[in-house]
Amino acid sequence: MVIQRIQSVYLLLAVILMIVFAFFPALSFDLADKTVLYGALESGRAGHMHINPLLITLIILISFLAIIDIFLYKNLQRQMTVCFVDIIIGIAMLIAICVQAFVIGNREGWTVSWQWYLILPILSIIFMMLAHKSMSNDKKKLRDADRLR
Image (cartoon, rainbow, N blue to C red; front, top):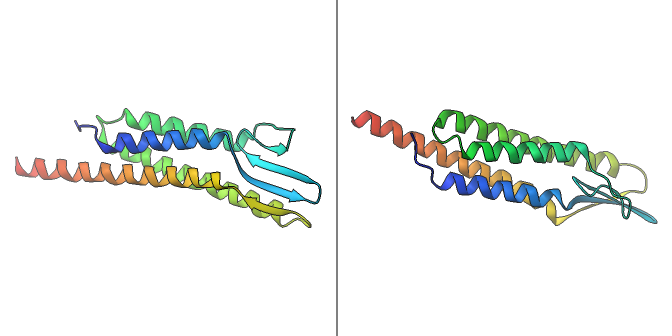
């Protein structure tokens, strides 16, 4: 059994950042007289908002896996695996946002504005990577302690 340490704080920060990111647009597309927002809960023309099912699903999945990962401290290998899967899903979400930006941005007349809120999932992935590194340090300490016995 492993004592929970800093990785729980890192994972909790990642969850908080992903939840905050859900409420703000990541991109805005401008065409002469209209602006279209692209985010999880704020998508569509300004004033006509709707939920983006792909982004909201990925945000919920990433947050849910990170919360589950906090409570998997009794099985360190499983905790590391879930954290790694969470990192991969977070990177896939960023790739999906970038693809959407380039697909719409390449249309004639559209300009893409990257919002500063896009830094939140990047920070979330960094916190998950730090948590994974802390878990590997714990695994190394356990291996060293077992070797000494």
